[in-house]
Length: 111
Image (tube, rainbow, N blue to C red; front, side, top):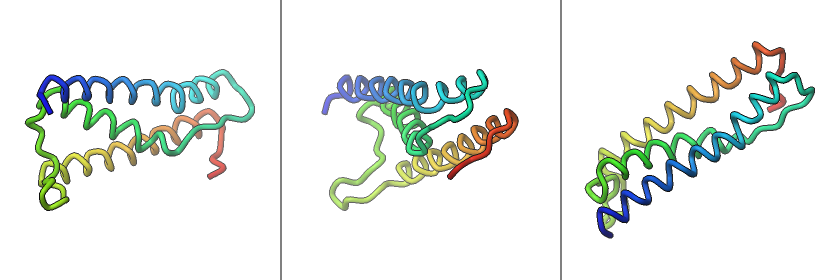
């Protein structure tokens, strides 16, 4: 795969991450700030958004030079494990921040 195609894929991932964040996280937060009685959001978005951002930035910056997996052995490289660790940290931090925002507005989680 060419570096241009990989970089374009990275840009597409960033756009998907931004759209997912808006529709499934930020819009419900705005609804809560407006005082709507019941708010629904998607827990999957807490994983999808950081994954799209981390890998989108990686592909956009490094292109096809981002060696996150070893296709021959079907395993992650050290870079891949680091990227997934960053995704996990951002997922946990994002969920914690989101719950803090809802708690501050007087909402409680139904999860």
